Every structure is written in structure tokens, then in C-alpha cells.
Length: 204
Image (tube, rainbow, N blue to C red; front, side, top):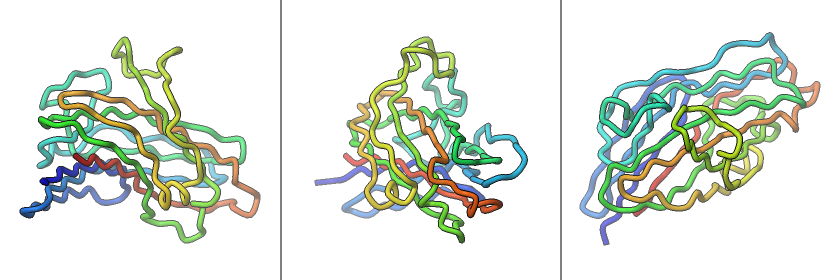
């Protein structure tokens, strides 16, 4: 049986697009550039914008969360957030929308990967992935739009255990909230910095 695998990666530093095809599998990877976490520094800005449209034929990110499912609003790469001044009370979030341009439904699975984490902040930064139904298509998480939680755990556990996200049908757009918190951060983490990839893989 032919498998269709489409991946969306939230990644810092380099923007990459990888396309690999064999007689048995079809794989796509897309990237969000810049998911950085810094403990106990002055507050800073965030990411935004998009990268190139890329080579993927099925799974795509929306560049403009208020936009529609047209080619000009789809990309294999978008910019991720930069989070500064993190402490044990800190929370923040990122909203993403993805669209299945393919002809078949796919099962979505999410996980984290490490780009740079010399001080193992992966144990101390937590993430929850939730469904987001942007009912009015304004690109903002409004009251009543937040759906079920697909998992809440440390970056470490997200990498090792993954969070299944259900199906994305052909021609369907799905939104997700990535909600982060510093509940594991202590004074020992002051000044530490880490960068992670967040990977969404669709499997037919």
C-alpha cells in the first residue's frame, strides 16, 4: 500500500525543505523558522511571516491565519516565535493552521525535536497542543474557539511519546494552539537558552 507522509516542522535557524520519494513512500517536510526559548532575560519579540512556498504537494501551513486556502497563502515554511524572560509563571502560545491539499485523509502526529538545548531545558518547558476552530476566520483565538487538548507534557516527553492529533481530511484546514509554560523552570535555569523543532507528520 502506498503511504503518503507529510510533515510540518517548526524549526529554528535554517529554513529547509526536504522532498524524498521512493516506490514505497512519499515524504514532505516543511519548516517554521525560529522557536527559541530563553530563561530570565529581558522581554523580546516574536516571529512572523512566511518562507517560500516550497515543494510539498499535500500538507501546507497558512502564512496568513486570516487568509484562505489558496496557493499564495500556503507555504512549507513559516517563522516561529522567540520567547524571552521565561520564569515558572510564564505562559505563551503560538497559533498555526495547516491545510491538506491532497486527495486523501491523513492521520496527524506531532512531536518535538532538539535543535540546541545544551542545558536540557527540555525537562523544564512544557507544551500543550489544542484544537483551534477559528470560526470567524480572524486569525485570533477567541472565546469558545479552543477545542480538545491532545496532550500536555514537557518538551522531552513530547519528543519521545508524540501527541496524536486525529485526522485531517482532503481539502480540510485545521488549526492548532501550541501553548507553552515554564512550570518546571527554577532559579538554576537563569540565562539558559534552547531551540526546538515542532514536527507535524501526516500519514495516509
